[in-house]
Length: 338
Image (cartoon, rainbow, N blue to C red; front, side, top):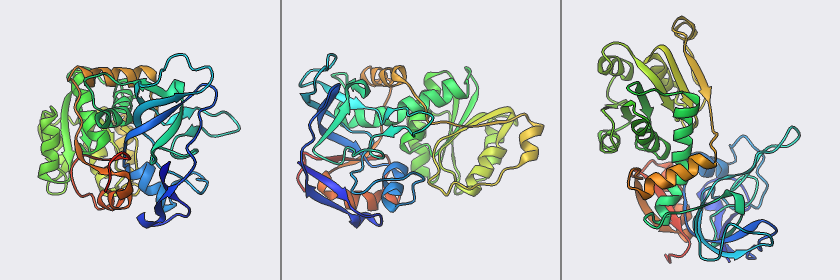
């Protein structure tokens, strides 16, 4: 099969299209023909650069969220059959006290390839009404958004939720998840057209944080109260400071992502005087994935896709994502020719 293989860390050009052996599914595994895999800033670009804070063994194939069609079954597989359309989950197992979790596209080769082997237990049936590019984005971001808001922040109806990076994969999912859970939503992004993405997905208000005072605008929109919840996934020092300052009394910040740098200031006085909680979270469960795909199948959850490119153009895809060019997710499809 063909795969985009990286044999060193560095710029996008370290990825090269190579012929490698097609993997064979073992016990409890399925072989999936990849139809779509997304390009992620942290779990693809940062990993490729060599700056990701985990040991990545070379040579390596990126791609944490492939979706496709089951092409072969390993021994003992009972819940999948050849021809099933499936999405995937990157956490293959949760590890233990003496070893880290096993993650697709990090610990093992991922979906930047024509085929990928997945444990049966981390594949999810895709509703007929959902195309596989959409399924890739839904399964990658929506389950985490639901878990961050419902399980960690404990969002309540009519609370104000500020979503940072509202046009991105996780941000656009969070706007919709917050509305689905009954909250009022402020979509914050770095350009008017990106703010509009959040508004189009159901946000009650929007803020262009590159051209407005984010904290002051949140206070104005909420009648001086401040946000009840901030969903933060950027980690930019200045934006984090403003988002944190926009939280009102008893506010909760949930964060997952740090492509903006990750080292941020913290106003400890605002933290303790207002009883604010900050939580980091990357968890989700089977119910989150299945509920997200079900909502997409019913037309209640939409994704924003910038473009779909051949796998052979992964180098250019990484450049585009690195330059923040375009709105929405960029998808690679190994079946397309350049």
